[in-house]
Image (tube, rainbow, N blue to C red):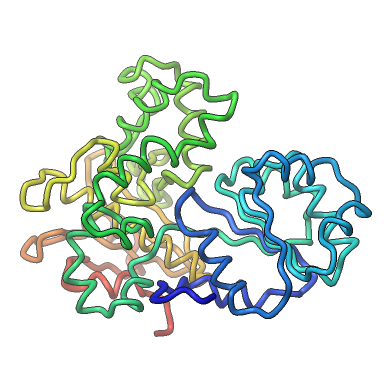
Length: 384
């Protein structure tokens, strides 16, 4: 049965085009970003017989762990599509998927996983050359523009900056605060807290809150260690886990020509503004906030990273800063093309590109991004 008024995901067509090409389709992403909904929407448009298996169920885990090709044939029967949800919960899932791919060439296997670190570690070696891998994020602003139209989404811009773009947040207006708290306190870290590596959940939350409060600022692991009381290695390990779980991502420093450029700096941003605001429990409206600059920055960079991923655009992302505190919010390098953007939440604010940067990189294209022109930034490089 087809879903009514479903928000079309950009990945849908890309996945459909790769069905029945002799490879396993792997869809990765944080919990609650809509992986299951996307797969079910794709399957609803197909006439093939389907078997659905969920790795959260104990009997399914037992059935698929350490199995054989003969047993798999019996499990699958005459079905043409096998959909394995929460595949990372199944022991030796990579070998099981390899057996399906090698021994059942007429079957299309689709596997979803809510944590890249577990699933990719389990599937990369067994599925070398046997998989198409996709990353799914929360809804992108461009997907919402396609769904609602540009006028409506521009009117909702401030709402998106505060509450983000998780599908459940979009589809349950009025419940944003409660849903984001639930999401940030349980679903988001469920996989992480199941890992033996996360032995101190309270410390884990302290590090996350510290990152949320330092949004838009350069982050020092030594400083985080001091703030949280954890050693440097623990801080680094927990941050790496948060990156692999699609909660945060790092933006490295750009450095090539200028002697006093920061070379090893890093900033951390959240894939979703709503999650960040839930972590610090601040859902105040833009006019009442003191952090609109960092929120605007987080929104723009995360949406741009979604664009790069969804449209398969080549581009390495950075920020730029010198020891004299000259700074550029976002730099993208692609095919020898260098583009620099400065972000300003106020349309009246004047953004300037530092002369030190302009002199060192005269070939760079430089722009200021405001609420009036940000769609140009998000769609840069796309053939619209």
